[in-house]
Structure formats: C-alpha cells, structure tokens
Image (cartoon, rainbow, N blue to C red; front, top):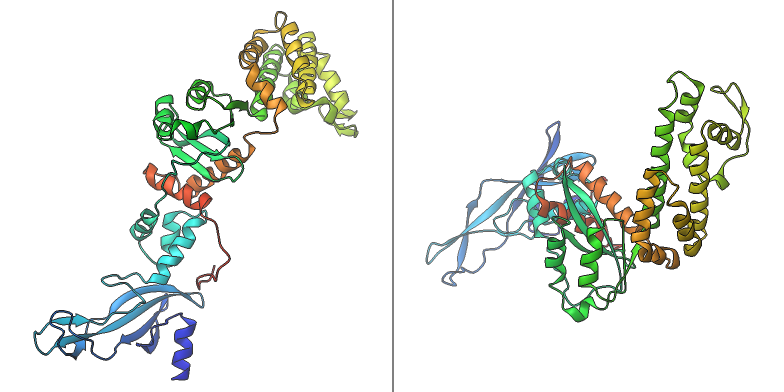
Length: 418
C-alpha cells in the first residue's frame, strides 16, 4: 500500500479514494487501471441512506505524460443506489469535474501551454486531447477593458491579421500591457473603441507614439486633445533611406548590365545607405574591383560614377547627421534649402517631413519611440506564424492577450516532461 500511495503522489492523484489496480503498456501509451470507491453518501433527493450498487463503465481520462509516455487512466466509478427512493448516484472525485472527461490538472497544463508561443494543434497533440478542448479552454479566458484608466504614455501600431486585413493595437508604453486589439485600423473603428472612455480619462493621455500612418493623426487629436504625437524615429530614417535606395536603382539602370558600374552599384548598395561615420576602414580584397579596398574607398568609387548620386548621397548623410544629433532646426533648414534642387523622389519625402514637422520635432526632443510596440508586434507575428494563421479574430486576440498580459508567476510547475 505504501508503494501505491507513493505512485498516486507522484501522479498528483490527491484523492485517496482512487485505488490503482494495474499499469498496462500499450506500446504507444501507458494505461492505468483504477477504481473510485468510498462509503455511501446521503441521498441528495430524499436524504435517505444509499448503498453500494456496482461500478460504472470505465471512464477514459487522458493524463499528463509519465516517464515520456502518454498516459490514459481507465477509472471505474462506484455507483450508489438509495434504499428508499431508488435514486442512483455516481461517485465523484476532484480529479475530474462532474460530467467531464478532462482532468483538472490537464486543463491547468493547457492554460500554461497557451501562454507559450505554440499552436493550439500542437498543444492538443502534446497533451493527447482534441483541438476543440484547447479552444474551449482558450474561450474561458476573459479580458475586460478597464474604462476608468488610460496611461499617460501610449503607443499605436498595426499588424496583419489576414492578407489585406490590418488590425490596430494599442499598448501602455511604460508597463507594456496591451490596451486594445481592434479588428481594423480605420478611424471609425478606433473612434468607436476609445469613445467608450470618458473625456476626462482621455484627457490624461500626454504622449502617443506611432508610425507615419497619417489617418492616425486626426483621430488621435480628436480623441486625446492633450496628447502630443511622437513619430517613431526608425520610420523617419526609413523614409530617407528608401528614397536614397530608389535613386541608386535609377542610376544603376542607366549603365549596361555587364559593366563594372552596374555590378558594383548593385552589389554594394548597403554601403550607400549606411551612415558614413560607421564605414569600416579595414582593407579587404574585393573580387569585383580586383584590388584591396576599404568600405570608404568603395563608396568613393561608387559616387564617382554619377554626380547626381554623389550630390544626393552627401545630402542624405548630412540629414542623417542632423537627425541623429537631434538638431531639428538644422534638419529642417537643410530640407527647405535642398527642396527646389532635389530629385522628385526626395522632394516627396521632404514635403512629407515639412507637413509633419511638429511630430518629427517631438520625436527629436522626447525620448519616446515605438520600439516596445514593434517588439510586441514581432511576438504577435510569431504566434500567428506558429499557428499557420487564424480564421477567428476573437481567438487570435485572446491568444495575444494571454501571451502578453498574463504574467508568469513563480509557482510549482504542473508535472510534465517539457
């Protein structure tokens, strides 16, 4: 009996009324034969005395892995019959809820796995349950929006739910907790959500960081009148680098495809976009040029092929310098000076910067960015990729909230071979 008690403790079977009878090796899994029996309880119908009757057909209860093998408990439950009214009753245990087949400990393990970046199909396969069981557990999680709180610092962005379908996400800048995930990024969708908050709550928001998606500007000002919009610095630099790269491609296509100019401008495109202050001075053999050159020398050779490329490269590097040194007056002064003589590619970017000057100045003066939310978006993409996409947006949103808003506490892990 001591050995049986040891086994039940090892399996975390806390119900002393469960007795293990045998363990069968079925090759692919282990089967534990057990019975549930205890003294007859009082009749719930007439409060009369009940007597032991027979055992119910064995219930097949999937369980956690044991020593690397999937485990199935075949549990026979005692039935009781009332001597007075004939009412039948089945023995109950805290191993599984009444009228359930999935044990409580397995439900806890499903919840634990949902926090991880695993697909629901993979969770179901690992724990030997159906995908529907995992989805039912997922839907038990409820995340209610606290309409009495909005942080002073907020971040906005979007992510792709389906092909051609973008969703909106808002995050607390300081804590990293998600505030909202909306099925769409239109102004109407965002407005309908945030108008649920009282105006006094919305007036507490002081800073909103976002990318350069212009529809966000107007709706943010209307909903949060006291908030300053801060554009993400990465996206500002990205606009400049994309314009520079398009210009490089235009000039590259002016050369013959087999010429040295075409091949080198195509091959060393990253050096043109890189900050000139970070170019390496180490000398290596370059097969394309058939000589030893540093990265700086390569750039000088590339710029010698075209005066337009050289002029706009120097302009690009000077703008990067003023931006990284956080000099808004010099940055916009240079843009205003270069706007008339710049190529159309750069003129479009410059006009966008001038239009959003106040937001770019905020980005240079304030130490806030969308970096934390971009990291969150990366995690969202991992969840979506591991699941091979989601058809149901509510399930997708719940899964994101579970992975990001539920904190992992240092408790005893559920028994499993992880």
